[in-house]
Image (cartoon, rainbow, N blue to C red; front, side, top):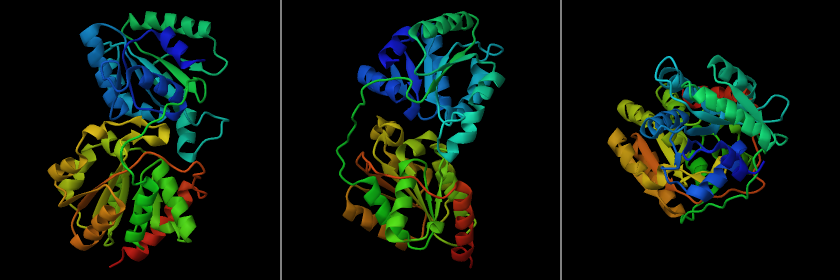
Length: 374
């Protein structure tokens, strides 16, 4: 189904969401049509924010909003969907559009498999009726479900469209920024600076690039923990490690991930572990799921880190500036934040880790015992 027809049949004029590769056609179409104009297409920090913004839209207009997300975001919507939207509370109608990663019998990455199996069950538990949308779904079938959903909306209830990968078609949009330093080169320089010290990498292409850099250099993967899921939480993982090891800990974060759970920076700053270096590679885009812009282009993350209590705050826009910042982090011996302004883009042949998450964690824990012992 063409994304334009999908949008036309739904008939909404407000969308808010977190971009998803399974919804690439929808996300690109919305971006071409509305850009990041929050009056029509609000790209939020996390899916819970989306639900709250959608509630505000409904209360101010009386019209039904659409919230789009990857199915990993279901966890983030459960609280506001149950305690804000639900008909036993405020009864706020919302149409959810959910990209189905990890659908059973469809090959996907480890972090999506369990989530894929429980995607529909979670909607059942939340008492949210749904329809699965695939390549074979006709426009008439979608219209019929939207008609049924409208009856639910009139009762203050919600409905969902669960979209299989590739079900929505649209021309691929191209995104760019004005920065020249690549994420992969940045990660290579971080890995070199970290040496034998542990590195925690965020989900998406950052972890994949770190894995391939280790392969290229013939270095052990045991130095790295690849946070293949749990977007927005790698800095908290790094905090938990840093507070319980004597080794310096390097956290490679992304702008979309950092913004998703920005409150983690406040907690990190309050604890102020002297052995943690938190690096956010900011390309102002959700690149791992298509490249839709984040709000990081209008947020001074370095100023946020300073306000949260990070002792040393640095920014790098070039390879030389990054090398200098990494050297400062090694010498300072205090909680350090580095924002790296990076270009959008990755190698077309970028692979994926060839070890399982459990194998990665076991090797990493063994390495921590060696480098973290006093």
